[in-house]
Length: 256
Image (cartoon, rainbow, N blue to C red; front, side):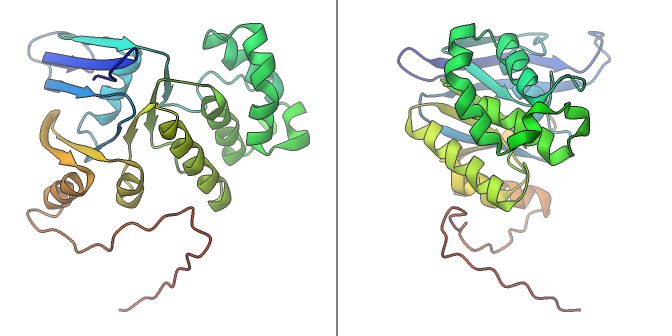
């Protein structure tokens, strides 16, 4: 994975990564992965459940070590893989923001500067001073996503984190991701939402049983993914609408 200039990310795995033991009779989660992503690119990773998408992000983030191969990273990387990971349920929302910032290596001064933006982004108000064990699941996701959304990163890994909260907050998250991209960050997105992938990503990569089976533009990758899922046929989808547009209306109908 490559983000050209001073920030880049590259992963090469001639063998792969296994989910547990290293015995040769164990199945590989990933094999023969050799990819690059340049600075400022937006790439969607697509595939069925169990294809190895989340494992790939964890290897890139350094959470899971690769059994073989290597990963090279330049620049600050922020993984939105488990957006509620690291939260302590007996601490308040505000205290958890400081805790996550410390885990990410932010200095006290950096966190003091970022804190007002993070608090505003969560839209939690007075709830920030309550223990997060009193939060709903949507409130927890807001808190975790807000920290990552307000930290300046060169490479952002996102694993199904865009289903955060209600529709208004989802649009806010989409707008922030677009802002990250405009500021030069490389965005790597794992999602099952084809519209989200088409709207955010310029490139797409399709994994199947741990191997790359297709790569190209987002439209090409989405077509390959649909053929994979629907056994050779491709659904006719309308182009993804901009979810940030206030003029969008949706009409739902059913036929039996």
